[in-house]
Length: 245
View 1 (cartoon, rainbow, N blue to C red):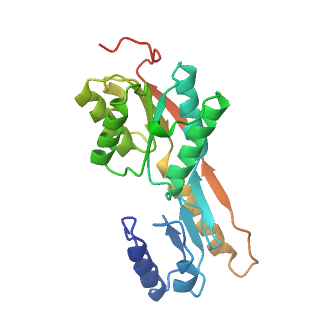
View 2 (cartoon, rainbow, N blue to C red):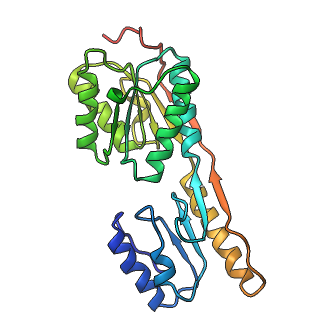
View 3 (cartoon, rainbow, N blue to C red):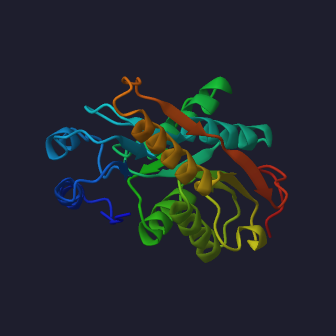
């Protein structure tokens, strides 16, 4: 087994795939660094099986394992709406990131279903670390009519939003993808969109193994497996009119 970390850099990904090709690997499981993986066809001319994880393949045919990004975001936002929240802020990854795009789509769909048009003033996209997420959340909390809840696309954005709430003495419900340590002891209600990361790895390995076993036995069409999400509620959310003193 050969493992490398591209740190989300497309150039490092291309170098890694080129190295895999030189090693004549039997198959590749890849978390794509960008939205376009056409270079895989160039760097892997012998076409070993490829499985992409977290993002679907683009300009390249391969099996993939995804998380239900849309469904998880839709479910969390719907829970916030059911609790009475109407001004729900959004902190997310850049629009070019598949997971962030799908999670924004789920957030927007839940708002539309409730008869609410997404307010651009409540949306901050492109935040990928704690500091930028905290700064973005602080901007939202400083609005004349601040959001009563924040939906965050990953745990960095959720934790950054929490620090903004603490530093500004504000009260709001948090909801976001991915669990994180101490989520259950924070001083504000938190909804976590959870999923099993081990299941992602198991399914990716299973799809790759099946491809390897079928080599020479006829082609299979590209397959997609979606890992389900669940909502875990930490703390009681009394809605936007609760006492947060």
